[in-house]
Length: 558
Image 1 (cartoon, rainbow, N blue to C red):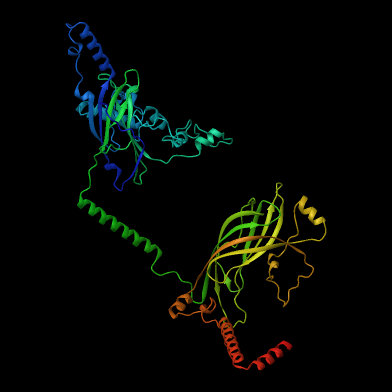
Image 2: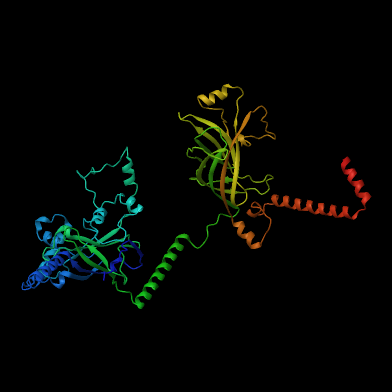
């Protein structure tokens, strides 16, 4: 009857809250059959049939010890178990040069004196050893798998370079490898685009050589690999058996042998009392961390002074569309009206990156997605002022850059920050000055450049203008494209808290800053006008029909 094997040797991923140092792994390797013994048995069977009087050879052949066919031991995390080749190597102090090798020399000498070596075939490579190349591990992996062909992901990840454990230099200053590759090839890009995350690794190996010939490198086989990233993620290859069939291990070479591999997790389970203590400890730790964060933030929410409005805008220049040339960028700056101020380190201008346009529908669109933030404070010094407070304005101009680094002005525009908090998507249309004649157009096409505004605020109402009427007669312009803004506005004031407590309704921001009366008067006038209009409508409905027609004719004549 054929023996069944576990062929699922894929990598298993676990997450554990316990420390990795508490991991215990039970490893059992058992020889199943040997081709040498089988061939000898067949030869003896043939000889005995031909010559019945010949004594069978197996009675004269010394039997292998039980320890040579089966070995089982428990391996701790990062526990160093020396192989027979390492025992022979580290016995000589002359072969030990590095501090790690000298440490291994001391441990090997101690094992030889005490004769307390508990392993013969199974040994380990810790994270400090040189056995770290994944390609070597893949070539020496002897566990039989269900599918020997590698997957597409495995083929791609096999070329990913690994983080080096040691970076040795030639003269202690210049590394052997090039620091910068100015002309990377396709193979270099394919193999160097990812650096694997630094992980702690441990390998469990086995020397599956014949009895009496242990210590040969060609007989060493990889049985089990454990990796962890220090954040509770544990990767095992292959997974624990968990009551399933054992894994099949075949040795290389002419004399192939089959071994049975069993892996189990024998880590000590935490007692109920210890688990409860740990939960209380974590709970206390989280509470202390929460108190620490609260101490950094403070119990009192930061509030502006009385009568001050704090405006915070988190904006984004989303896109620009409908412009003539490609390679667009936006230059913008903020203008603060009277009684507005900002912090000293607050930037009030900026420039986006240069963006190529792409065709979306029938329009050429440049997608910037450029974020900016703005914070300002408003203080009403005199409540008897007749004019309403003005809001900050963002002026911008769109420019294009050609192959010869020549720029052209594509359009001017402005944006008044919304007076209401929340999210706002605003589309601002732009225009540019136009000079009469064809010379300006030819100059713009061939050598770049175009008429520009000396004062960018001229797109709206200049701040230096003091008259009653602003005339732009004779000023030629051309409508160009549009720019889309995405704004998230926040308003912060003490009056908001007072308004919430008093449950005031239909009041704007200006009224909540301390009793500004002009905006409220406008609302009162509009409400009075609506009441008068309703009364007039009711009076008209109560009049006879001929009087209504007469009043209608009188209104039409007027």
